[in-house]
Length: 604
Image (tube, rainbow, N blue to C red; front, side, top):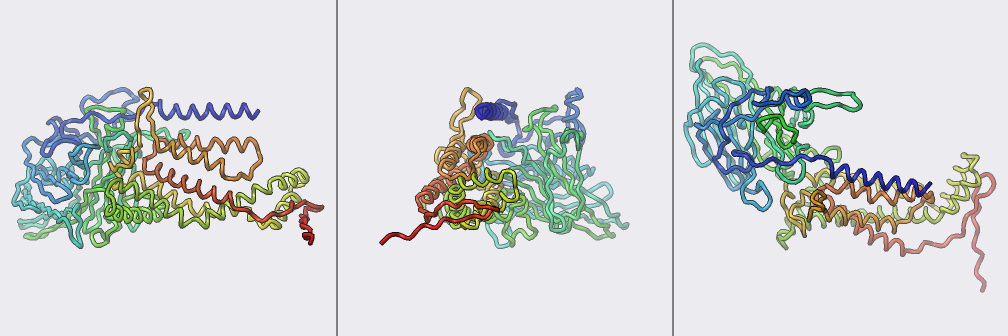
């Protein structure tokens, strides 16, 4: 029976492995003109536009495709007549357009679009609207050509006049490379509405685009991290792109079709749209009323490739009624840049908890502590040896944690060792009182008391370390600092360390295999309190199950687990060499009472 169960377990593992690696995967589309990697000033090929919520030209009409793909906003093509104005500092190149008087896109000078290529990553390169463009506002939106009033190295001003005579001026100021109260990725925005007439205007709602986020084009499928988010009343909320897609639910429960948009109520302290590493965050001086989340189709027709879809966000704000000869203004600060926790946690430049955009989840405090520690160690390592500095930062952070938790892990290991030693005696108790569970429990507890063993002593110390492991688990894969950072053979710590493709389809990832090897060695070195044969075999399979689950994890997370395992192996070797005081076996007596044999005194 045991051999049969083992065979079934192996077959299930192989089936899971095959399901992961032989099932269809989304593939990044080929670069298109005006795409993420387009050169500065290059715009997409002019073409027809569609309004949000409609399908793109050439949409398929099949019922299945329509269910999955009809509810999206199409990419808008930029006017060939638009003039692009560029403001730049050492960190970004912000490209503004007079088509809507808004921010067309932002190039990140410190972050390349692709590994080993110098072209910068461009946020909002493919988009439904330019950032901070008015949406669906005739005369003000992306189809309206504004007049560029002035331009300096750090400022650009646009102006237009509506048919009603209302004057609209849009001013953008780029932050310097350094400043106590600003960040170089921030842009100050001011839109002023002036009423030159003799009659007051009514208050009107307007909608501002926050940009469109696309999945970074690398070998990992990061479309799952495309989200919009907002902060209201001190709480942060996140809306993944999948919420807009058709879903069959769980066993039919919660099933729904595609949604054209999701509207979230305010007041919103800040609102954002983001992918795995970058975000556009708008913080208005006055709270916005609501956030509108939409799915964007980058292709000319519905597609089953997840990379063909992005996510966009819009905020709705109210322009107050304007008295004659008076004016009203919408003002705020826009951040378009990397999701660097240390940067966003600077309370002088970011005063509204914008660092919560990191979305570390339940273990966010542990993630923040670990990322802060890792960043500090990285700064120290750069001064010593810039080569592989982030990789060594992960190694040293892991070792630091292991050293801090040595007392707890020693207690857990010693407890496991003592539990393993008394297994024969526990088995005697089980056999003797197999028909009387109450007496069996009483005798077991007496044995623990006699041998001074805490039955949960091996669990509690491990539970203390779990939040830090989960903190690493949620922090490492989405830390922008690790993007394209090499270590040993791995070219990118934020992705898998694939060194070859076996049989043309199976990636060979080294670090997860090393991690699994340490788990197997730990399994053989750590005393097991169980004597159940089936349970022992299942425990032996656990490292291989973990390898399968962790095989596509980022190299950074696998590196942490590998170093953690190496340290644990060394620690266990030391513990196994430690000698415990010898005790004579305890025998369970009548009524479950344990009688301890006393070693006779030595003869003189």
